[in-house]
Length: 504
Image (cartoon, rainbow, N blue to C red; front, top):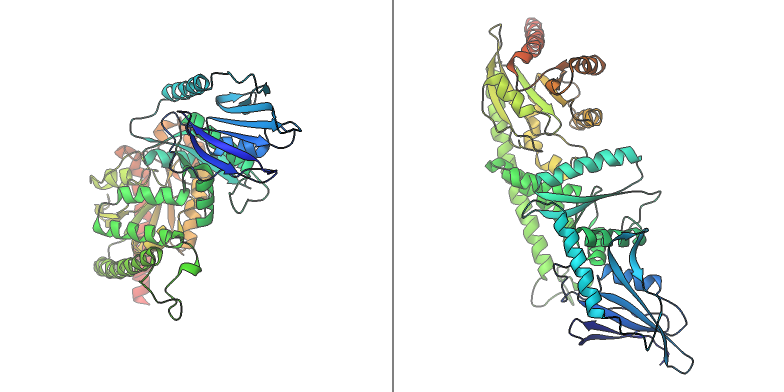
């Protein structure tokens, strides 16, 4: 036939598939119904022919990797068609000298008594033992965070460190982080296929079933990476949306989060292309009805329209509440800052309230307003807001516009900065960039450097001078006196300006 022939054999010794290829290669079919078990291997070994005197090829090793096969074996042929040498490879539970697999010495056709089943059992036992050694909280998913970027390495490290915090907030255990700096992004896989194969083996060794990419993936990239690795794949945006969905408590918050999720989902509903479409109508377009994909898209669009109408009513309600505050002429002070900087704790300490405040990302989604009487008998309204984050998803910015509009009526913004976080300079940049995008740069901003109690006094003082902020501890009322004095100065200047405006 002058064609390569291969068989896929299961653990019982039965032939599951027979594959006929061309002169150069065979193409293994989809093995979806053969699910990878707890021991991570597929339960199938591939034995196929090579028509030339060649050992295992790169394609053979990629199939071994991406399909999690028990073994990959290639039989070379003699001139008369008899078998010559058998080349065998298997995956390794851990890297050995930079190799993710082991290629056995070539075997003669009479030397095949290698106890294949025993070898596979010992490999799976070692994989299982490696997984037991890793400490992961019960019921948490295992994930590998991945950054593929042209940015400097330190910036990528900071970003993946934050991605790890986001994952842990979502009850995901990060078992490994992979950072790759590239000159040009692969439009299909984001990274090269060789690096992707290393990622698959790493997931196999670490027991990970989820890949979290720091970069936003387009729908085709998610599909390509998922099909190639047989792992679940999400990106930073999807992770943040999931956290927001878990944290949303109020009706308004749930509406905004659902809208953001549907706006993210809609372009990712992918089917079999326009050839299958029945929406066009006309000849060839009439028949039993819409395809499932088109029906899903129509329902998503309809729901988005409903949610947008609900948000319009929310905006009207907020506008009414703001107009009442304006009539009472009470200055509005909004607390802003990066997520988990201590904004809710500061609100609680300032106003004596009991808003949820915990050391986790996005603990607050719904804005909360409280009255505060300053020492000089001046009353103000203090508002807590949703935390900002670097690469804040566009869908969230759009969906939370009703919430973010609250900031437009603020007379003063208190920017809370966690100076105990080593990434706080980048966090300051991110917050200021978001303020520019919201066109709020005209509102005066007062920086407060939170968590000074976690640093020595000299360091806190130097940081305050460098960044032009007031060092405080949000949970220590005594440390807030300089902040209250500064707020009173701003409020008095606002009142003077308003009186001058009225006289004019």
